[in-house]
Amino acid sequence: MASQKGEEASSIQPEFLLGKKAPFFELEGDDGKRYALKDFEGSVLVLYFYPKDDTPGCTSEAKDFTALKEAFRAKGARVVGVSRDTVEKHKKFKEKHGIQVLLLSDPEGKVHREYGVLQEKTMYGKKSIGTVRTTFLIDAQGVVRRAFSKVKVAGHAQAVLQVIDEEGVACGKIL
Image (cartoon, rainbow, N blue to C red; front, side, top):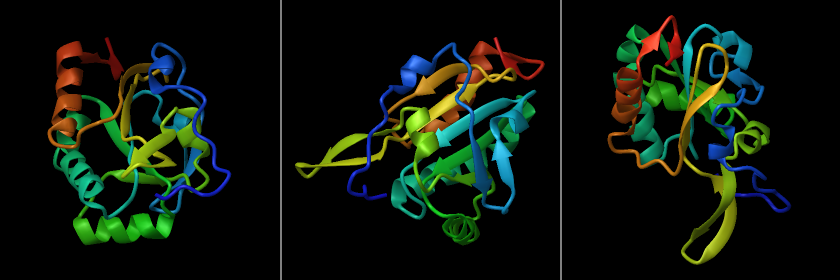
């Protein structure tokens, strides 16, 4: 999403959250319900931040997570995407592409900043503030166990699932 004048980048980097309690959030989902971090306690949460609905990379990423949704569920994990798009845009995006993971709306970017994913980016020599594609693995107690920063879309969802497989998931927590 294009940055707005006066917008500030995150003051932290995603890696600084490792081993710490995940920052609190409460956002509206594509289903119109409000979701908070505590709603995912007891499950591993795959929380992925992406720049914009209905763009090629973001669509591929959402489709890949959708294709593996049941495999994540079998490991005790829930997959949730977050962007700065509106709930209405999320609904249209999901309908158009058959996306089946929960999408949360953070239009002001507050949660993006808390997780360190709203950063200065350079494209074609022009600097702006935007979302850096990042995924967090948060354990059943709400602790950040992994941060995948500056994600390349191809194979990412599978790589996240593989990390859960390799590190093991018991009683809904990453070991």
